[in-house]
Amino acid sequence: MIVPDRLGRWRGPVRMIQPNLRMTDARGLDGRALVRQVRGHGANAILANGGGIVAWYPTDLPWHWRNPLLRRDFVGEVTEEAARRDVRVLLRMDWSCLIPSIGHSHRDWLALDASGKPKVEWAKTNAPLLRTCPNRPYWRTHAFRGLEEVMSRYRFDGFFFNAWDLPDCRCPECQAACRKGLGEPIPRTIDWGSAFGRAYLLLRAARHAEFTGELASRIRRFSPTTLLSVDFHLTNDNPHHLGRAGWDGALLAGAVDLVTVEAFNFLDRPRPHWEHWADEEARMIRSFPRAKPGIVLLTGSERWIGRRPAQPGPQLEANIRQVVDHGAIPCIAVSGDFRQEDPEVFPVVKRVFLALARRRAPTAPPSARARIALVYGQRTMDLYGGEASRDRALCHYRGWYEALDRAGTVFTVVHDGVLPEVLASRRDLRVLILPNVACLSAPDCRAVDEWVRRGGTLVAEFETSRFDGRGRLRPRRFGLRCIGRRPLRIVRFPGTWFEVDGSSRPWTGGKSSIHPVAGEFLLTRGPRRGVLALRDWTFNNKPEWSQPERGTDWHGLHVSRFGRGRVRYLPWTPGKLYHQCASPAHARLLARLARA
Ligand SMILES: [Zn+2]
Image 1 (tube, rainbow, N blue to C red):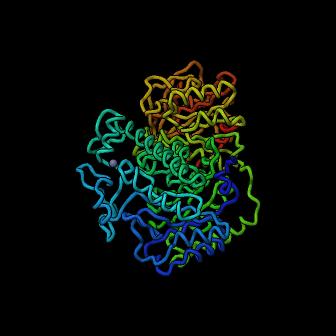
Image 2 (cartoon, protein in one colour; image 1 turned 60 degrees about the vertical axis):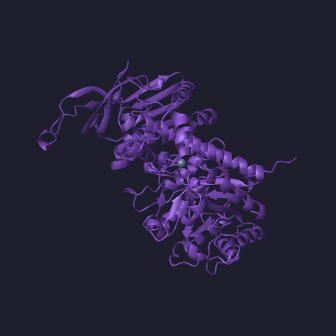
Image 3 (cartoon, rainbow, N blue to C red; image 1 turned 120 degrees about the vertical axis):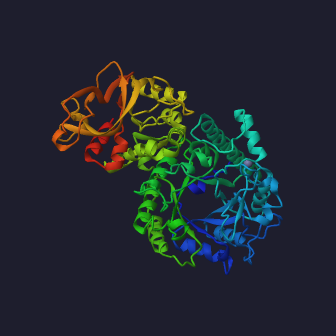
């Protein structure tokens, strides 16, 4: 028997549009015309509404609520026309909620709050919804009937599940899972920074990824060619959108067939907006060991918390091109269809997509051959950063990303969840950068040590590996033996300098004999002196006195050998400082540190 490549249609150049339909778009909706419009905009794939909270086809399932404004079989029209025009189709499902009339007649499907009441979403609006729980019978049993119905009736490529995040639920099933996994019930309020909170976060993410993998297998058993993709983020600056959503990027990427992530900039995110979201996720998708195709969702809609003003036309165009250059699939999501009160995005998408359609796609994006890997530490964000993950972890990584990008360096981004596999399989990798990746498990530390021993160059910052894979402090040592030093304590200061002498000049470049440092510095002990001697930080910074007279015995850079490899350890935070102030001195230092 010939086993078809289930993902073959998604490995070539794919350009996708998601007309994310509102209830009222059902009036006069023509699924065939919609597919033709998608084609006319240079796309060859559509993410189309299927079912879940609202069914966009004449379902026979009593609890699957048909859009009452829909007069035709939208899914039928889309899938038939798409097959005729060779357009790939993912059907959007959403199991996260139910309308109240259905939810209230199936109380055992609902997510419950700490007082045992059903959780309501959009409670204060004209259309509240009841949240469902992935541990309860709707997700575990009944909702799959909806997938079977769709798979039996229509020809399409796969499912995309919206809202794949976990509710904070206290239903009996969630309580039982917690007691089984951690030996205690879920408290009324969860302190995510506590030992319980961290363990619960890891348990939820592992169970959710396991369920996702089981769903993919179940779909495959029913229809061997139908793919599964779910909505999650690989990177984010909101702690609620990573671990607390139940999203472990590496585990979920391993569980699905197609990796789909969202890189929407919201107006309510901290400034400056992170303009690399699209390319960083595309790079990361490509670096996962199993090389699955990936979709990066971008948006161009004024609605949805002002997502378009946060992503103006030129940036959308740049993001589409970056996603393609890094080997992923761009998908432009709009609220509604082509009958728009906010049509500004369409000319941009049409021009860029048609230009891309004429161009030959790069077969091996540069980042796939990169010799430098920057590690994104989700575990560090979740367990060490917590509510302050942006400040404690993300800014460190982002500064490195910006410095490498601006220096024109070819690099890839690796999720910490697959670090050992990447180190074992990427023979071309020469430099590994750990930007304050504070949480590293013992197996991860062993893999990095071994990789350095064999000849790799490691650049590590600040508290890297000072905590284990469950976020617990390792007293008096780093997890990475190759650092060769012992952490003592952190000191904080508004600003001072390192002395730049002959031995440190190759690292700093420039002409200045001082190099700025501010914020946090981890005092460490080790056998050898470093370079970049730290000046005293306790001086009076009134201009008349702003000359620290004393030097110290602490250093900003420790360069050492470990086996056949090299280690560059910086007990401070140059990546974060660069992200915050874009100083050219830090840009030069980071670029030089990343050289093989
Ligand atoms: Zn539950």
